[in-house]
Amino acid sequence: MKKIIITIDGPAASGKEKISKYISKKYKLKHLDSGILYRQLAFYFFTNKIDSDDVNQIKKKILKINQISFRNSKKIRTQEISRFASKIATYDTVRYFINKLQHDFVNKNKKIRGFVVDGRDIGSVVFKNANLKLYIEVNSEIRAKRRYKQLIDSGEKSIYPKILKEIKLRDKQDKLRKHSPLIVPKGAFVISNNGTFKETIEEITKLVEKNL
Ligand code: C5P
Image (cartoon, rainbow, N blue to C red):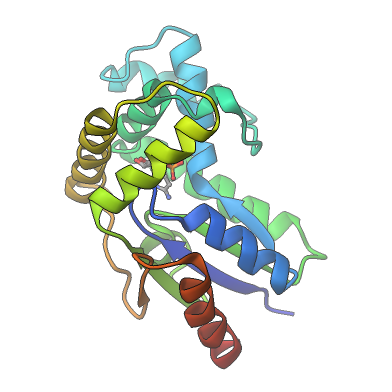
């Protein structure tokens, strides 16, 4: 039986993760957050003191990695790792490595009826033939405000202008890179997440029910 695939792409802090979690739970699908893989890889290079600009060293080291954790954790969510992940995500070797991990994961989980995969290139490159493709759009000021509130609520120190600057920098890096830049994938529905989560989810569930 062919597996159901829903792809959710969009910029940093657009709410993809929360939406993906909700949709995967509601429709009994497995959620795969591809950003975690970029972050885990970035964390690995960072802790092994490899410079994010040293593409040759990264190419050499990546050949020796046989396993990457798919698990989320606080240590891969720092601004430093976000920046590092976004930098190495510009290298085609890294993208090829992570794309393969995602395909292997889907093929390996034979009993699962389908997946919700979120990231930056999922509908445009990784799962081009997905059943439903979504692209989440939110303006950068709203994203920065939400991220700022999240950090403050979790007891971390945070400065709004700094967060806005980081978000804009990551957008630039993700949208302007040569390999698999962040775009609206062909055939994707563009969903505005500028309003409430409830409004966004209502729009998405209608699309899921119509398209699956
Ligand atoms: O989604 P998240 O912010 O966790 O992703 C971290 C970084 O990994 C992004 O800024 C982006 O540069 C990169 N990424 C990517 N392609 C994906 C997922 C993440 O380039 N499919």
